[in-house]
Length: 365
Image 1: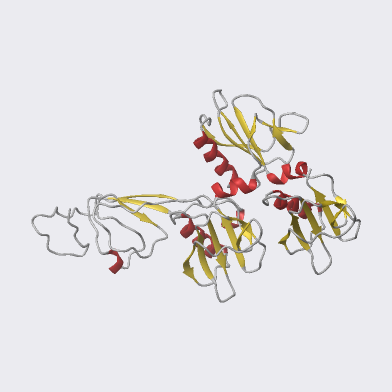
Image 2: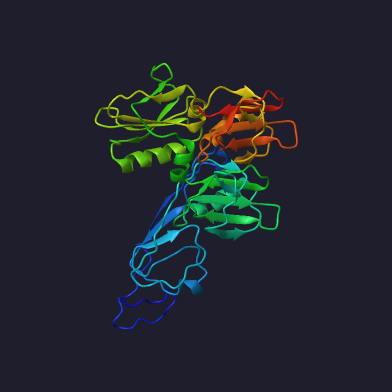
């Protein structure tokens, strides 16, 4: 089928006539949650339906992407679109993101990821409004796995990530990072348990539970869908799916008292790494991690953060990061000195902390 430019005045006989715009209807959906709330913010998605055709959109100043064949689909983040092939509507996508994090998006080991990065907009993106604008652009980008804003430096702008190896923000100034919810599931939650989420003593925890979706969640696809919803929920500490009974659905937990699943049928539970991580390690020891003879071990050590790690909250976050690092064997926190930060060990020769001040050590169980 041939296409007709929107502004064409004459219509060749073989082509269908342009319909008037009066039948045009618009449906808009937008999440109004502020970017700083750490809840997912969906992209503005508008669907325009009508029997009209567009071509040559790259030559038109259109804020949107279109197709020759109805319905015309417009994605809010698009400002330019190459010549449209008649009958091929562009795919409108929305990606869910977990909460906003300080710093630029990095791999689990803290190294930068420059592969699969596309700059979507220029300029400073420091205000809530600009961050939301960037997040909307990223959410509408096919294959997005992360989103990043930068301000007050030469590479300022809005960037989308498509690499699957990013896991977190690294705390660097003048940057914010969002990781896609599906990708964040693997970072935020420990492996799935059977049963519903309970406390360490096996008692049910009904405080801080929010139902996110109705219906059975028995299939792998539905479980992944639920886990992604939970990962995008501010303050999530766990996730739970239920099927084959009256309270079937997808639930997010926000209580810090949950510890595990209880093996009850028709349920699955995910507990956040932050809550589960202490169980991966022996008790906290003072000092830095050393070998059995007391000598230091600097091989297989990776710095994950560069801030003081002296509070209980920061140390909990540190061991959570360490527990997600491939082949971790220990974790170390340092504060009030030049090499302050959170470090993960992968050497198998560390056995204990040596009692030195301003340090804490955890050895893997």
